[in-house]
Amino acid sequence: MVNTENLKPLNKVSKERAKEIATLGGIANGKQRNKRKTFKEAYLAISQKPFKPIGTMADEITEQFGTITVDEAIILAMSVKASNGDVQAATYLRDTIGEKPTDKSEIDVNAAVKIIDNIK
Image (tube, rainbow, N blue to C red):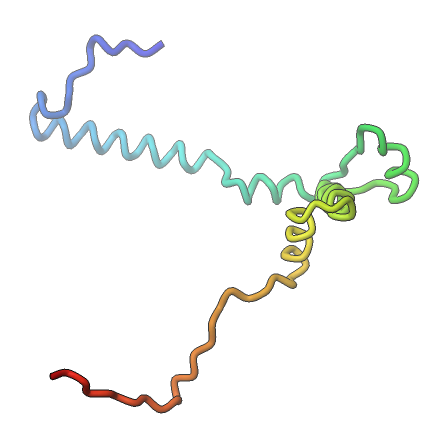
């Protein structure tokens, strides 16, 4: 439990001490941030690990596909959901294989520009 009774606001200590405290806090924060894995790093660490299916389809999955990875289990689960009509699962699969429709608009910069002066 944190003891907050001996804490002083930074505006109640000298400027030098406030700067020292802020520096120490910044260093500690940086160390903590370096320890934490990003979601991507954590996912990449487990994505190729063997995965043991559980639940009602576990035996069928193992029989049909043998040993599968975490990535393959996710794709399999999303495929089952998509085949049962889950639009979000179908969108996920489409986007994952690189067939996501582009959200970009193309502009022809060589097109002629007509300036209309209608200021009166």
